[in-house]
Length: 413
Image (cartoon, rainbow, N blue to C red; front, side, top):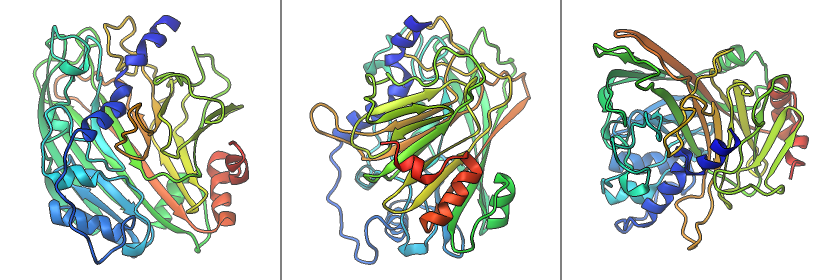
């Protein structure tokens, strides 16, 4: 197993580095100065997106999110502070403004995007049959990259999208699937109920839930022997010098590792700390690193804390108890194609030549491998929440959810 893990340095989780390489070779058009909003605010980003796309905005008071049908119904960014508030999602303004459609991937950013796995291996949907597992042969399926999703309906708090997709994996199995994606803005009472917490009225919040469904619309059943798909949600967030990512894990189980940290070489101890029941990882966007948590160890919550801007970000996902088959995205013929991670986090940083697409940090979750008979459906849900306010009030939230204090999080590094 250790040999397999070492080989997975070429994993599909190498994806973010590839984003960087592609983006750095793009020559965007000259930006036009935006006079009405300050860069870094939600107002700036929604003005920008309205100029270049046709976004959908959901809002309730100062809680707002913006979604792009052109970019597969992804949540591009959100805020708890109205147009003048912080914009939480990282957006690749240069690539979007350029208007270019790149041949292998279009990394436009966004704080929750819909993807499908696996990326590598004999059941990959990113490599054609017989190709080498090299960058030159890799490409993102257009249906989850450059093609838009249809906007089915929208109101002030909800938007629904759909897409019919045909994919052929490395083993030449053809998938026909219907995707539906529903994005809903949540109010304070819904947040408190779903997390079983309470918090001060002085806290500013924005939260949204996505329900992502795949239906096997073909005639053939999806089997492990011919390959399975997973729903893969990836979020790119704006960093600061004092962002700490924290991921709780189960301590009463056995697994090959607690955290996999060698996707881009081993992460130094001043950037990754593993304590009893909690993993701490720097999210400052200054040094590339990636971590992964196996489903046996994973818990359905993870988060980050920005001590400069006093923003607590929480993700709640689904980790079905006793389900350990997750697709493996390693760029190789795999001995264990269903021993993938359930949760990942990435911190961006400069490449060897000094170029960088970000900075950003990433929180990622995946559904189990989906074994669907013809006509069957499966869904995967996730909630993304941002809390902004005093450190005292945020600490109360953090301790209710994670049983860890903000002072301990800040002291990790």
